[in-house]
Image (cartoon, rainbow, N blue to C red; front, side, top):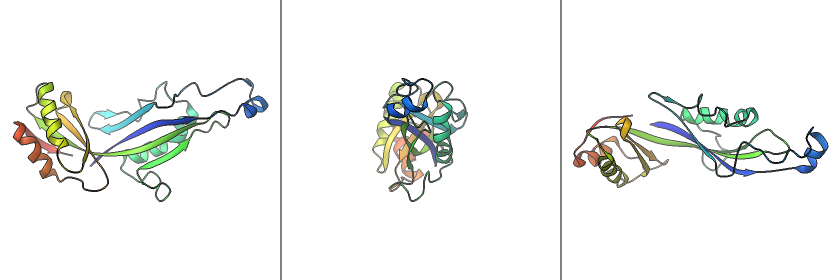
Length: 180
């Protein structure tokens, strides 16, 4: 099983009374780095490692300080915050700016990488995607044609066996060369 981490901005707050009282610029306003709905997906598989590279210019130090430990834990497959949220793969956190905090939802996304030989075009990728989406327990499929694999996202329960994934792909005329 592999893991990605999605960080979503779910809210922004502003406390103008605190800005007026404590900041050098009492009209600083809301955080300029993020907008509600912004999403960032972190990955660490094969030659991809966006934990260290994706945030350049997109996170201020306070926000990254807030979310980085949870992102790192999720990428390792750990419980982001055991026993606190209703799902150990989830955490709600905010940056440390007390006058204009940003609220983040941090989610561990579990998936299997199905390595496939023989895919050459978008039609091939579409056939594989459709076949894998029909397997019970699969929440989403992303076919990475340039990498010759499909990322099969699963929930906590009813995780499909590797044999079921292979059985779904092979009738499309492709060979499964491995599953991570």
